[in-house]
Image (cartoon, rainbow, N blue to C red; front, side, top):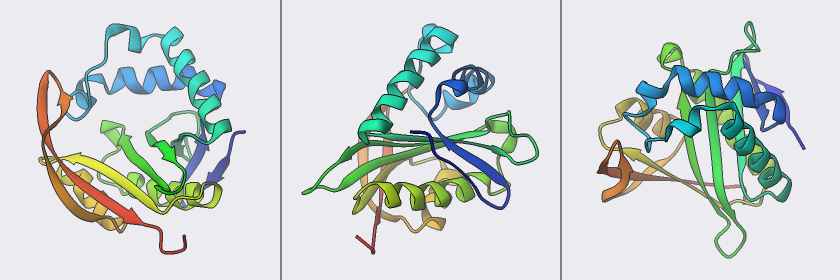
Length: 183
């Protein structure tokens, strides 16, 4: 099942097979930028075959509600994906938790698009999945991302020493969490 909804400025949709070529374009355009903040991908990642395979898996995971991916574009340019949001490892009670992540096209930073899309996507995922706790990790040096989490109502929970391999080096991360008060 694909969900589509909008905010004041954005169109947001969940995984669907029409997105595979758009995601290839999105990730290819941002490869160098994302490599500063995310695990490095192999050359195969930047192929239509791989993006199609990933999208098939995302669609299946959404049907089973084990993860949910959201992609967003500007209303005045709906064909260009400018960001992605992930809710992975949706776990039922007693955990009722999920891991949350996001990224935004380098050329669209600083306009509040990511915060707007994340807020709407959090609201949506909470409406379709029984989640009490949303967890996120962010590089200690990624101030923009830290501010997004704080604007969304996440609170700082802890420090993870050398926790995620980024660009060939295990990097320190901050752990943030959000509690669903309406659980």
